[in-house]
Image 1 (cartoon, chains in turn cyan, green):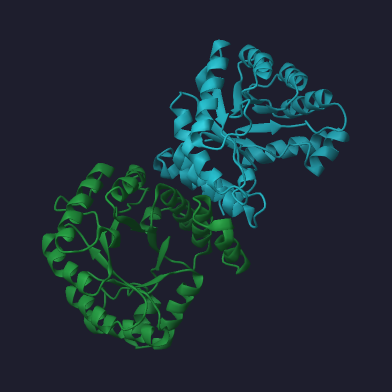
Image 2 (image 1 turned 90 degrees about the horizontal axis):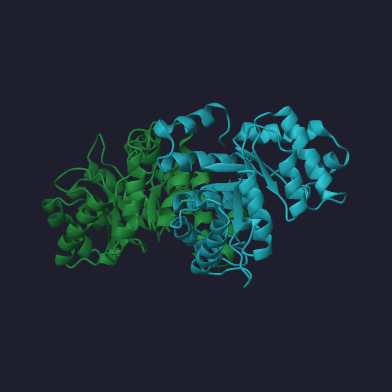
Length: 265
Length: 265
């Protein structure tokens, strides 16, 4: 299970302050904290920057990698120029994700060649020209279309992570089921699946309960990765247990290690 | 989701003391506590009684129902005479479960006519003459065989709850996956599924994490009920969230109620 830590996002007040003030210590601490909690990748999102997103993301990637030499980063931006600059700034020995493309042709034309050139993994939201999909079948059809387009550009299916788009159960309860149903369908294409977790519980109390329960169900359905806050113990507990329960943790060694390190609830 | 509270079991020291001392107040309190926490049924198990199981289970059923007039009870015994006596003692306005039969013919011959006569639901462990099943397919084959036998005696599939037998992941990690795979297979027969939950985490630390995560995965796979300790908040949190996530809780009303009543972690 691939865990991408979501905390370095400009929409969070402390992160915004740190970026504006060029407080590198704070950002490095946030990155380390997420890695210690179990994140394999650090998402970096400066999209809502009040300054210049391109300069901001360049600075954030540079300071994190200068302190953590093997950090793996997920470059999260709607802005082609910001993605390009972050890729150029990256010198660490980890791996890269680009987050994200959709079925939109012009964006695929811009982003996929970058992903091929820099050998990154790529997140594709299952959104086509018709807007947000409702059924699992619609998600699958969009994924198939996107896979064909990116394969044409030399990008490998195994590095493509589809996000079948979670919607809040408080307002669209049947969408959780459709999301879960879509996972094995999409994986049958040879691609992988990922999601931004927290939307599922929007509008409900005690969100960690919904988030961690849904994650267990999604892992059971075959989910390969998630973008989430790894410092939430209930989330990490759910992932550790679910990995053991689907036979992806020999002798429950990782689960027992997480317990011993005090990372479980 | 049907919740059977497991706490009234002679193997628990406080219960054993209360039964020996004929301390009805303690037992009624244990029953009420489980109902308040969300249990629909109270499991009553006196099988390890050092005295007379038949007299003990008669007394336990009698005192609980005298205080809780609509209590539903799960009569849990390997002993035909104890089950028969408990059925005779039951006068409350709830429903009854008998726990359990296996594929063993002589036991089916004794117990199923009682279940028909008293209109109870019935738990059947997927154990045949060949001992414990390993694969989902073996569980399904045993369930099919048991269903045929009990149907012959006039018992309805919809009242039959198969327990596909959880084994500890610490020692048999692939058994969790086989258990989960068997649920939709067994349900395709028109029968229901149930499990005794806590075995899954035997031998591991922080058992509530494994138990609650596995329960979410099992509910996602279609599990209809579980025998568990409803006073564990993490378990009830997992059930409440999972029910909402599989669209079995309109407007998340039950989830929000459980939160307001302080029943979630």
